[in-house]
Image (cartoon, rainbow, N blue to C red):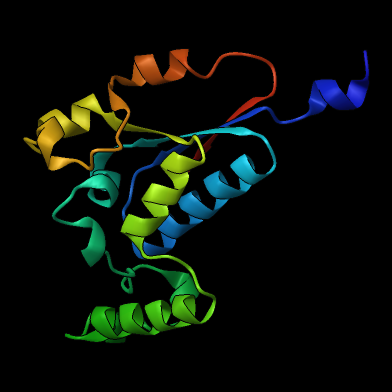
Length: 161
């Protein structure tokens, strides 16, 4: 057997726990990139990551300014009223320049390319959500054990975002 083929990434399993705009786009871009390379991709939305697939919240995601050292904004300033909205507006403007789709459109692109989208059962129950609260393209609601059982096979990698 060819050693390069054995070491090849065959499946990427992303766990998204926070629905900040930067985390969501990181997961979506990497899952989309995997599919473009012929790699299987799945995203498991847990805890606050569920907001990225919640019909009423997905178009209202923000950049976290407080506690985000990459923002290079002092915490005291980052917590001022309007800072999060300003940072979010600026980020969305930059993403538009790169012709990145909005969250809803990106989800459609991902599912059309074969990315599997899973909601975490524990988080769904904890936040008192129903399947109807989530986008129609969600492939199902899984326990973490169910998700891990999907992460079998050589060349499968899990990435927590």
